[in-house]
Structure formats: structure tokens, C-alpha cells
Image 1 (cartoon, rainbow, N blue to C red):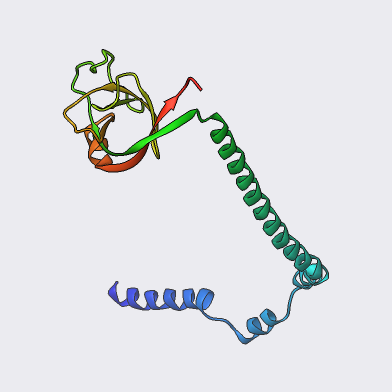
Image 2 (cartoon, rainbow, N blue to C red):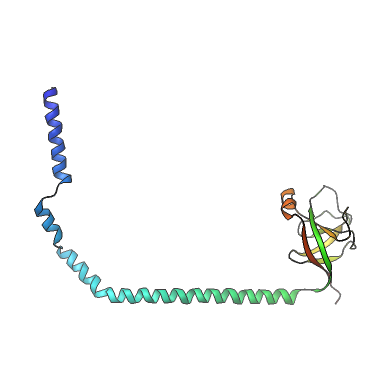
Length: 181
């Protein structure tokens, strides 16, 4: 049985190589000549080449035009938003530059009796409770708490400990919002 296996395996390998891995010179010659379908396809592509190139140029111009429109729209939107913000700003009086720190809830209400809210509550010993202030770069707040800080410090209430750590110590101009003007 062993005598027949080796020649049979060699025969199978040659058969596979003949079918898959080798090309005759007749096959190579045929591959160089395009088929009628290839000729037809090449004629269509050649006849539309100029049209395709013109479309590519037009598409590039359209993209530049579109990008410019988007840029102008964003600039216009920004201008409108800035104008609306400026018009909606209440009258404010600069009271100075303050050191800003951050604090988190202790579970107790503020000195004003309300519970602190992130984005609204600040603690300050040098401003009366209920005073509405604008902190440059942060927004509007209400003095609702007091604390152990000095006169030139405002403690901004934040939602959690990591936010307080990330807040760090900052300096900003602070304004009193005058709603009576």
C-alpha cells in the first residue's frame, strides 16, 4: 500500500499545479488582448473622461464653496449669540478681583436656609446673603452661604469632590448684578 501512496500524492500535487499555478504561453497571449467587453468598457470610459474630470473639478469648487458657507454661518451665528448675550446682560458693577475656591455639600442647609445648588450657590463673608453676582468666566451666582474664608475669597459650590479638586484655586473679576437699573 505504501508503494502506491507516494506516487499518488506526487501525481495529485502535479495536477493541482497544472490547474492552478502554471500558465501556458497561449494563455499569456490571450491575456494581453482585451476582450470585446473590455474594449467596450474602455471606449465608454474614454468618451466620458473629460466629463468625469470636469465633474471632479466642479466637486472640489463646490466643497470649497460649501466650507466657506459653513464658516460664514458659524461666524454669523456667533455674532448673533454674542449680541444677544450682551443685550441680555443685566447692569453690573465691578466690585473687584476675588480668589475662587470650591466646596461640596455637607448635608446641611446654607446660612441663608436653602440647600446649596451647583451653578447657583456661592459662599462669601464679605457680601450680604442674597446678593446676586456675576463671576467672570463662570456666570451668575447668588450668595447663599458663608464660611471660614477671608474677605477676598468666594467659595463656589460644586456637585462633587472631584469637581472641587479640578476647580482648584482661581482668580476672577466679580460684579454685583444691579437689577434695579
